[in-house]
Length: 378
Length: 226
Image (cartoon, rainbow over all chains, first blue to last red; front, side, top):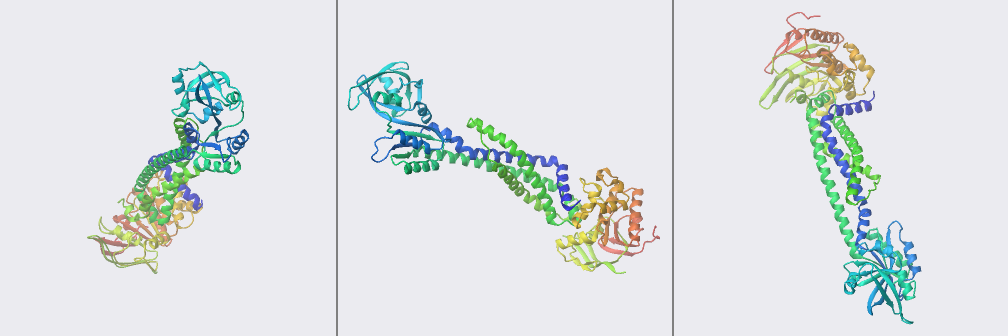
């Protein structure tokens, strides 16, 4: 048996013999590792998870015509859409504002891509149903109250082109729109229906985009669009971006604080456990020193036990941490969390750091044991 | 025969208690000495000083030609490891290691753990068949013989035994003393600390301590028991 085998034998046999004492310390390391891995997974996944949640705030990037360009063309909008990462694009809809008439009263009609508008503006609440055909519209709640309109009511909208005769068309109100904003005084209708009514297809006054990305990436994409499409002036919605960044930072700080507190408690538990073991083994340490063991040998043996404890705790804690992260993510965000592989390494490093730091004082005490005193049982 | 151990005017004071008073003593190589005395006479303190586990507060200790009384802790550890074999009344075996591993432990701290040599050491004390047993599976006498095997494994210059038969019945005491006789015959230097006159009479020299003072130094009253 060589020195390494003898060392391993002493470390493992000693731990097995005191497994009941070390169980508390191991449990503490497992809990610490669970929290590090679980909270770490949530920490790194928060932007992705919250990015989707934040989309309920509405669009975070608006495109408007730049310079002499009076409107956005379908070609420019397609090109802009191609520049956006598909996996982060929640929705993009053109916005076309026109004045229409209902019972000779002027009102603002907003032509949108209905499917995309639902994604870019989850705050748009509809009493009734969203339009599913080109002859259906949403009426803002202010208009609906004034004109006594309800879901299912028919209305006739009239367009007055700059040149040419007036055009009338009958629509069905599929639902009443409530946003708490200016759109409560609008009629929201499919862009195709508005274009058909006006007889001038293809142009948009603006476009709203919802991206599941952080403020830095949105700013970078906006600059790219500005550089590559001269007719478009991208405007990141800074109010929303700032809110997102603030909430994200606070959540991340909270996650960090919880993790640090748990690691400190882990350190206390491990330190207490190791101190108990050292006190119980004073005679054994005294004997080893009497046989000629140097301080570094004693420290090495206890450090070996600490490393085994940390590795076992990190391994088991990584498994429970993955489950913990999924439970947290499912209950808070309603979707699974992804687990970066490097987090397992980080968990192992954190466990080693906490265990060895906690063991430092007890092991130092062990190294200072006087053999004659310890063998007398004092 | 040259002196393996010399103590010159050695005193040991713990706070207000003087455990050893001006002890001057020389032990020749190959000599078997018994240190006797009642409880509190200072015999264990003397053993701790000679065994490099305590430094005297006054005086000089020379072991194998080296002045050990002023060495630092690390140097004393090296002396214990390389030149002294310790045998304890309470055996002090590592409970989670087998008999052969307990012997190898002393080798491990000394240089290299050699299982074959450790097994031979166990054979010499009649424990070859118990090599794989844990200390709790051994009788008191077997545990003491294991302790002796461990003390001898690194071929120490001096064997120090503190009440080696204190926890043994008569038959096991006889077995342990027989091993000491064999060691003595082979030229080992042995110091046995004991309060038992029966055990002391096996030595070729008896040193008597009382209240930390050496009050007798001479051959046993009765002829040595072979």
